[in-house]
Each structure stands twice: as C-alpha cells, then as structure tokens.
Amino acid sequence: MSLEGLTQLSPDGRALPRLADRWVWENDGLRLRAVLHPNVLFHSGQPLDSSTAAEALQAAVSRPANRALYPSLNYVTAVKPGGELQVTLDLSQRSAFLPEDLEIPLQLGNEVGTGAFRIVENTPAQITLQGFDKYHEGPPSIAKVTIKPFATLRTAWTSLLRGDVDMASDVPPEAVEFISNDQVQVIPFVRRYQYLIAFNSTRKPFSSPVVRRALNVAVDRNELIRNVLQGRGTPATGPLWPNYWAYDKTVQSFNFDPTLASSLLDAAGLRMVAEKSQPGRRARLRFTCLIPADFSILERIALDVQKQLYNVGVDVQFQVVPVQETDARIRSGQFDAVLLDMISGPTPGRAYIFWRSASKFRGLNFFGYDNPAAERLFDIVRTSTNNDGAVRSATRGLQSVFFQDPPALFLVWNERARALRRDFQVPQEPGRDPLLSLWRWKPISTTQAQSTQ
Image 1 (cartoon, rainbow, N blue to C red):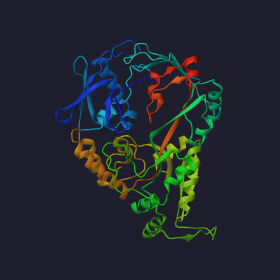
Image 2: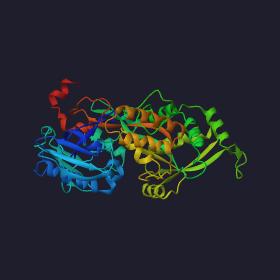
Image 3: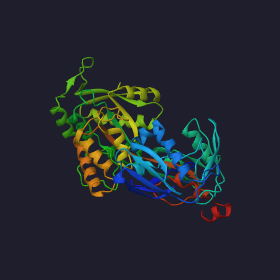
Image 4: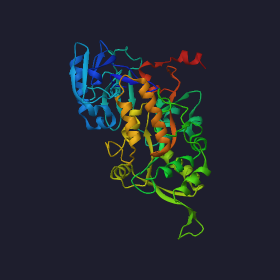
C-alpha cells in the first residue's frame, strides 16, 4: 500500500510496468535499461528521477535478505542513472529474472515510498496510513487506513460483524460461509503459495527419488481439498506455477495411485514390518515431520495427510514446534521433513531459490535437493533474456525432471480470502487480492447502500 517497485507481476508470471514504463536489454543481456514513469513523487516530495531511482535500487540490491529472495540481484554489479528518466543495471552474467525481480519495493530512507498511502504511525499496537494526495495514479478515495492486530481470528470476525472494523485480512476456508452476510462480503483469491512437505534429501530414505515419487502418488489431493479446505484450493504436483506462461499442461504429473505408491516403496526396499513395541502396528517407513506452531490450517492438513500415507504403510509423526525453532532446524538440517506454506509462483524464479542444486549455490535450498538436469534447465530459463522458445522448452524439461525426481510432497495451491463490509465499492478483479486495489476503493453512501440491497 505504501511501497512500489519498478515492475509488477501478472498472474502468468510476466513482468508488467509499474514505476518503470518499459525496459530493454543491452550489451548482450548484461545490462538492463529501464525508463521511468514520469511525474512520480516519493512521500517526502522528492521526485523519482534517475538519481533517486538508482539510489533506492542500490540500497535494495545491497540487502542480503533481498539477494536471497530475488536471485538476479546477486549478479548486479552496478546501478547507475542513465538519463533524465532512465536507470541502468549492469550484471556479471545474464539473468532473465531481473525484470520480474524489479518488483522489489523502492524506498528512500525509512518507509518513504511512492505508493498511494504513506505511513504516519508504525507501532506494535497499530499502523496508520494516510492517503497520498500526490500519488501518480491519482489520490485515493480512502483518506486513512488503520491496521490493527487481533489476538484471534474469531475476535477479528466479531469486530467486523459489529462494524468496528471494515476488513478482516484472513478468513480460513471453513469460516467463509459463516462470516458472509448482507453486511459482509468475502473475496477469495488464489495465492502464489503452496502447501508441501519438504524432505531432507541428504537423509535416507529421502535421498531416493523413487521414495519421493511414491509419496507424491500416495496422496489424494482432491480429497484433501474437500476434507480440509472446503473445496478452496488447487492440486499441486510440482514447484512450478501452473499458470506460468511457459508451463506445459500436457506434461505428465502426479495422480493419486496408492497401488503404484506401494510398488515403488517395495522397489526401494521399504517393505512392511511390525513395530517392536506394538506388534500389531505395521509400517514400511516411519519418519517425523515438523510443523510450525500456531498454524491451525497446517495441523488439519497434517492429520489428513497422515491418514492417507498410513494407507500405504507410511507412518508419519508430526511434531509441532515454535516457528523460530522450525526455522533453526531447517537451516541446520536437523529434520526428516517439514510441512510448509511456501511461495512458489508466479515465476520459476521462486522455485529457483529453493530447488536449484545445493552443491552449486545453496541459497534457500536447506533441503539438500541436488539434480544436475534441473540445474542445467534452470540456467537456461535464467539466461534466456530474449528467447521465449528456449524458456518454454526448458520449463517443459523442468516439469519432467520434477516429476521423475520431486524434491517434496507437493499438496495444494492455496487460497486466501479477505472479508470486508459492503460499505465500499471494490473493483471487480476475480482471483486478485482486493488489497492490491485499495487505493481505488470508493466508500458507498447510506443512500447508495440502500439502493443496492
């Protein structure tokens, strides 16, 4: 709401203009020249010109956390003003991910951005934003936004139903019907995240692609969506965003096949044996999977997956641990598997940061996955700055590699919903997060509200 990048991402993963109107590759793909949108001001009143854009970009590139999340920034060697409304970025090697990574928010100093709202208060109790009347797309119709934390979702919903707040930012699937009424509307959208169980591929038996394939065909994702997510989700069978423009939907993917799962586990040498302490309890594979604490949706997913895997002789025990401990154990490799809600779209750059071969560049691949074919294909996608055909071919190849050698048990692309009072006219953008268009919301007068009921 307060910060913007030079670009923004479309649902199919292509970079679209935002603060930059256009960009062009130069120097054989080793330089990107961006032409800035005119008449853009920072909240301080300072114009977005070549110098301020280069300054803000250089600051963003220099942050280690940004380089971990935006892979192309690792190859940026210089950011320079390139004319009145131009900025250039030089790279040590080609990276087609750079235009999409330029969605990274730009700011001058502390929280000074170019967005439709400027932050005037930021405390643990609340964040207050005021409409920026000099916003380059026009002043927002809403003058002030106050963001407050609630101890529980139920408390937030109660406040929404009473009219004390205008929106609750997160509505889980089972509450959508409960919270919808004549005063409240619920707007769902597909997130670029998926629920998955990531394996520690450095540990046996998860070092075996056959075992990881077996576990992927042992789960009925549609049943999981029905039982746990109330029908709100899309089956996930790999790390690549299925709506990505180069994604090939004809490439073979995982289907629910418990018979095949049992056969693959047999082929991997994992046969049914009785547990010594419980002779009547038989399993072919036992392991522990971490779950970050205080995420009830993850616990419900875990119970459903646990039941399904047990049907093929896999006994998984879920261990709920604090988020900080989960993070520490992942980073140190002290886990068999972990259930996560992981960003995976809408571009292959998201999969790249987690699943490129750990032996080449660890990055955020704390899971030990290493596949030379995936690494080679990722490099083709990354370096093909002006060759859509090469990107399509490499993406198709990656889909096949991840089918034969999946790094995780991929479950569901998930949905989120925003619940808001019907006191606002919200642009109709199916499947898109309504928060992204908040500056275009228009309050509805009492007379207008009565005429629509």
